[in-house]
Structure formats: structure tokens, C-alpha cells
Image (cartoon, rainbow, N blue to C red; front, side):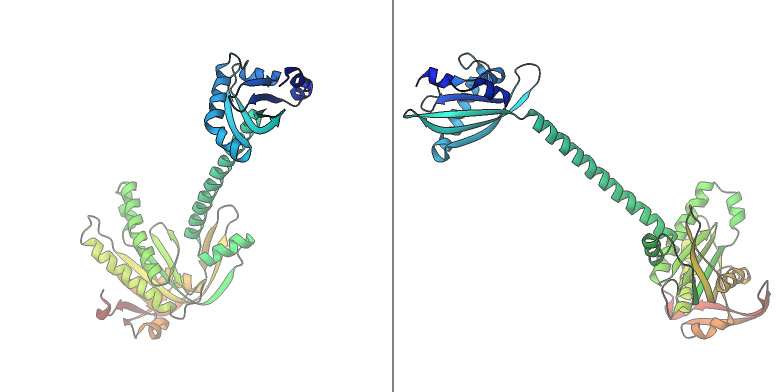
Length: 349
């Protein structure tokens, strides 16, 4: 093969496109030709250890591929100066003047690989941020679901507002602890908070069991409803069941805890309005005749007793022990006939 013939290859053209070229004999991988770009990256084939390594790689990895398909590709890293370069190497088997030769084409893909790494890093960052946003979304959703019923939350999430709704057939439970103010004044706040958290958590589980919705707590007061926002034909029985279980839970808790708690509970049935109140600090609240009556009636209950208006008697008498306790003058409501509500012995568990 004529070296002069090979030298006619346009060196300037190869350099301008940033491609390193070498031509080697297939039989023994002897270099016939290399251009300047190839030498800049790998050194002089006659003396470069890097070229020797490439030749060894071609000998070990490429010979079978070149024989089978006539083509072999790989990537190598070189460090001609201080910076490590990534070179894509493509070897093609060809015939020249009756002899098998390997045309080695080399391209500097360092920048491409750096961009790929940057894109991958950015993609990983976006993925992490997305996961964090999803977790934050879940935390916000969980918080809002603690502030409002799910159906109200779905409306708020979809439209950004909640339309006030009048519910005509709901029942309300209002619980208040006896002697809480004195206890709070004479007890470490951490202990007080722990006691309330323990009891309110149990109340929440009981409320959920009977299909009631805890609306809010105000200090030591606990307000729950049934029949809103989802209709419930047995709303009166639902709040009565919750009230009975609240009392039983406290009785059992008092047997094993240092601090003994007693509560008064008022029940009422009637109409109520439910809506999200506030613009920046959201809270779902209910108000109306049923809420007012339940709040007023709990004052007339004896400790660990449940009081309801006589109007609820006919909804509860089949499943509860209902005892009339007389007529009372209730502020804002006038004379109201009241009853005590207790669970049947057959439902003691």
C-alpha cells in the first residue's frame, strides 16, 4: 500500500470536522496512517501506550465483530492534557488494493456525555422535587381532611370555594369535660395536651365507626355531626351511639389511668348550615339550631350523662334507654323537655 496515496486524504477537511482517522492493517493491526486529530488525542502510534491499549482492545474485542459484521464500536477515555476526554471509536473493515484494512474513526463526544449527565442530573432533581411535591400535596390533603369532610374537600379542591349548604335533617353531639379549666390551670400543659390528644383520638375512631363526622374541637369541647354533608337516615342513632361509646371509653380509661375524666354530652336534631369559613385560614364549621341546642343541652347533663330533647325520644327508644327528666328553661330556646339517653345493657360492649 502506498503511503503517498494515503497522504492524499484531505487532512484539513478531517481536522475541521473534528474527526480522528487511522488506517491499520487487519492482519496485525499495523498502522498505515493517522491524522493530526488522532495523534492529539492518542499520541503517535509508534510510541503511545494509549494507542497500544486501543490496539489490544481491537485485537481482543473487535476481531470477531469485524469478521462477522464488518463493524465494531466502543468508547474510550483518554487524558491528553489535564482534561479527560470521551472518544467514540468506530472501526470498519474495508478492502484497499487487495488487502483487508480497518478504518478507525474517532469522535470527541465529551461535551455530549457532559450534557447527558447534566440532563440526567436535572431529570433526577425534577424527579426528587416531584416526589417532594407529591409528599407535600399528601400532607396538605391530610391536613385539610382533618379540617373538613372529604366531599367538602373535593368541592374546595375543584372549585376553590365551598358553597354553604343547609342540611335539614342532622343530629349533633357536643361533649365537654367536667373540671377541665381547673385541671389545665394546675397541670403541666404537656400533660394536658397529651390527655386531650389521647381522648380525642379515641373519639375520632368511635365517630368514624358510627358514620359521624368530627367537625372541630374547641379547647376541651368536641363537636361531631351525622347527616351532613352526606345524608344519613339514622343520624339520631349515630350520634347517640357515639355518645354512649364516649362515656364507656372514659369509664374504662379511668380504671387504668392516673387522671380521671368525666364528661357531659348534649345531643340535638334539626337543621344546620355547613361551610368553609375564612380566606387564608380555612376551617369547616357548622352552625344553626341543632348546633345551638346541643351546645346548650350539654350544660344540663350530669357528669357522664347524655341529655337530648324529648323530640329525639322516638328515634332512640328502640335501641337506647330513654328517661324523661323534665322541662328546663334554656337560654334562647325557652322551655324544652329533656331526656337522659343511656345504652341498653345488651349493647354493653
